[in-house]
Length: 153
Image (cartoon, rainbow, N blue to C red; front, side):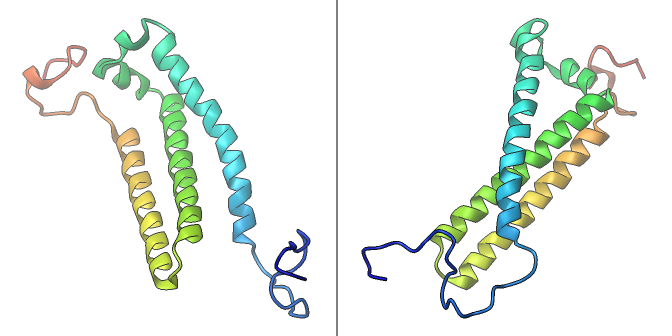
């Protein structure tokens, strides 16, 4: 093959006589995840925007009480957590792909990819804790700092 021609799309890289690598193909599953999560994220995000910005009074309805009311129901808690998880994993996987494409040094690439996944895991953990432990009326708070819908202490 000359420098002016391309290899057939399904031809193996490197030595054609070398055995094919067996095992889990993470790149393939990453590709499949990106397509599936992208479609699901479109549904989740547009549903989120529709409920928050179009139904009711539109953007004027969004305040602390609106968020507290949404997080009082498990449906909206799980909606937002699934959206958070998918968005962070989808974005981190996309950044991993960019790092793989543009960082040539193996040690630097490995460090950056580890840093991406550690930050994503931290944000997923923190966001999940915020959603599921959100309490708009914490006990022992001064009455002047509590929202109007909280019972007086």
